[in-house]
Length: 371
Image 1 (tube, rainbow, N blue to C red):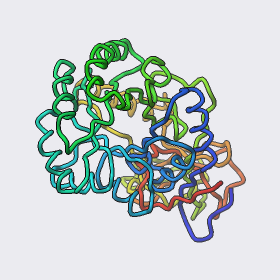
Image 2: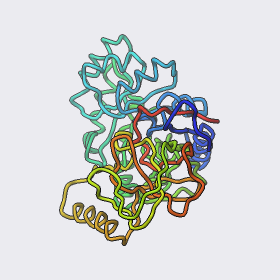
Image 3: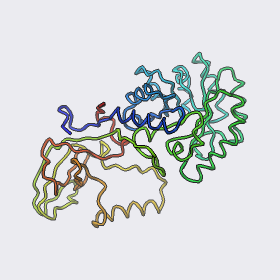
Image 4: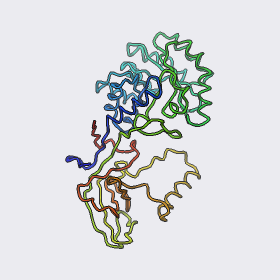
């Protein structure tokens, strides 16, 4: 890997990897694919990924917010778009005017949706979401037929889809959710026989073949990662690679410290390198999107203690080729220092690959798209 002459850090996104994953997924699922491009296409770039999947044959693209749909339309993306969450009512007319399908998750929203469609001057396309156990959005199964009936009798709305979402498709609860959806499906689609039925996310596409229906709604697999609890039976290509150029290499004496707080101290003469990435870029960050509990706190504390005591290797490191260079000292806002112990061929200008949760890698870092 050679350095980008105009960049100190950048992300390479492989179009070939995206397309290989799409083709493998579509072949395995044997049904239409809705490509989920929410959250900046899982960090890989909203517009570029949307165009790639649309051209590859995705039946729909899925986003969460009207703002994401607007960005796609402004970029000239003509694909069919599904907005997965109910928008603020003030944005509903815009969503329908852009010819997006919108999730309908509450029977009380039927009239506001119809009014928004009238304002937009076109029929409002809706996908009725049924809450089979996720607990966030959707109508209860016993209410779904009545809501579908009301939508079908409203001339301003078109019931074009019926769907649900799995909390843990690879677990037994996934099967129970599928059973609930199957139990009510026929009663709902009688009001819209041509509606697209979809339920399977990445995990369900693999673990629950019966949930594939008319279309699978996939994100994680398309970007080259296995979903939680199940592994793909086909090869996945990693589409995302974060790189940073070494800006300094130093020889430290035994006892020298590195970083804020002087928390790390060299036990012996040590060669170190500094790269221009830090926590503002997403390096070293870990998502904390879990419920706060004593158990979670104990797990986190145990991980930190194990690293501090030398019983566990830090998860904060970079690669130079296949060699692992662990972080030493605190990660700063836009800089991090790594140990080059056992790595002799790294100097100023060398390129490190930076592991990261791709969703956390700052959008201010350029995405460079390669074949």
